[in-house]
Image (cartoon, rainbow over all chains, first blue to last red; front, side, top):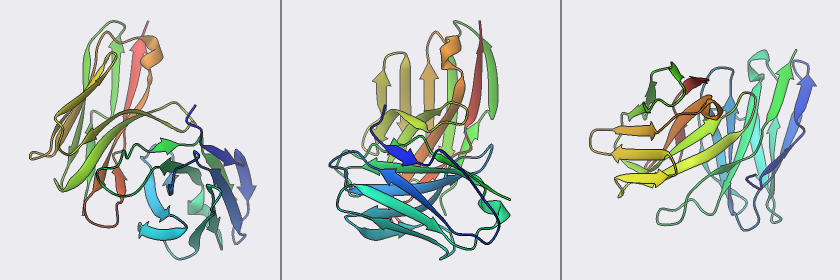
Length: 116
Length: 113
């Protein structure tokens, strides 16, 4: 157990809808990162938040957005869903984004999103 | 742009065999490299983290090495067991580009009893 939880476990949406995925980090972990993992591929970095501010972003369009809250919870929001958004969405928490700090990332079990 | 490659893509071995999984990366400016295990449909479990200043890390039957200058890492698994069957992923966190973590596509390992 990593102490990182995600909800829901599975979700089915239709194209064009909006979705919110939730993550609860380990207590004390100020950094949360979100990843998209398509079937048979490695996770792709979406973005990272540190103390409620986005401080890193991968090659994902603006319809992917996030929030991080002071209570170590966070959200990933995806607007105008497309078929290619079907994937496993993973969040990971760590102590901080800076070198010299223990930087092991602890992953949640993921949310499986299917877009029809 | 950082790219991470893992070889082989899949591996099947008999129980008890020692094996090596390979990971290579194109940009040596990294903070750390982390090896993960992923069971089908599940999240990732951290196995070993190697900081850029380190050469290797060990945990039980696992040993990971890092050669930053050549852009290579290996994960050595001793005395493999059927319970080791999973996908093994390596990931590098770079010094540039906002602390992005870049993953390889993984090596699918099957250990036969």
